[in-house]
Image (cartoon, rainbow, N blue to C red; front, side, top):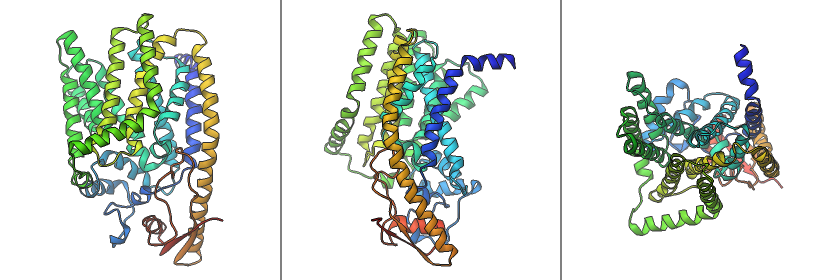
Length: 446
């Protein structure tokens, strides 16, 4: 007990910072209600259109495998992500998800910090945590859709914890045993099946570390080889799903791919050019000042390769929503914070001062983001109240206010499908199914 107290005391600043991050994200989660696909996943999956369904069955844990079987053949192969989404959809309240999702976000921050400290060979520093958090706040694409939206978070935030765990597991050379084989196979399969671009990019990063290890030691890790093999199996199983093949049909001529590459470059370079420059400058400074080892430099290169692979793989996709760059941004962040650790972790006051400056910038951004999210929340809450009141009064239809146009990408409703005026619009139909009422009409608030 005494040793635990001493350990907690040593980690007090880290715990305070992580708790603060948890609270900030939890507040936004609690202010974000169900949106778009969330209504679909409340039910046993049969189709994306509720008009084609005769009997609608609410999802439960035991029904998830069969539901995902339908989803695999009809929509896409992300059965890992959507199993998580559907698990939380069985509850009558979103609060269990809000709490767990905020914790998963904290785990993501901790994993990025763990990679940066380990690969820079430096002791973990509490005041790097705020810097990583602010990095994710400003650079994770469409924060509302990839972190706060249930369906989006399941596909991007939760999957990032899985494929980062896969990379971390394989950084260490592990002795062959039944236990390590089973663990390697499971985590490899989950990482490969996480999503179409970040999962294989994570496998590529592990392969690069394996090649480096082989060149240095002339040894091949059987455990990592099994992990990569099952990662490839998971990826192919996801990618080759009939649903994904139908939705992903596109003419993959060089002209189409070249145009997609150009679009991705234009979309990302404006947002990240200063980060690229910062990684280069800090890495060069680390080498010149002899703060970065050759191993650390290779680690930076490998994560940058993973970053570009995750981003530019989307050139083979018929669409490139920015939230799909989530994993690429995470890999870029790890590459950035390796030299940050190497240069500043042992310099007094630099990290605390940087943290204070970044927190000021964060608060200036958080306040308007919260206001925008809260405005949507209040109208969304009013929608629920009007529908429930109509049901209580025995009415077969409800008239509800339409959400205002979201101003911020931190708002999960930004550029997503929401209720419209006609009752036969897709989201109106799904909301009516969810509340078990005949029709839902929308009207604009004056």
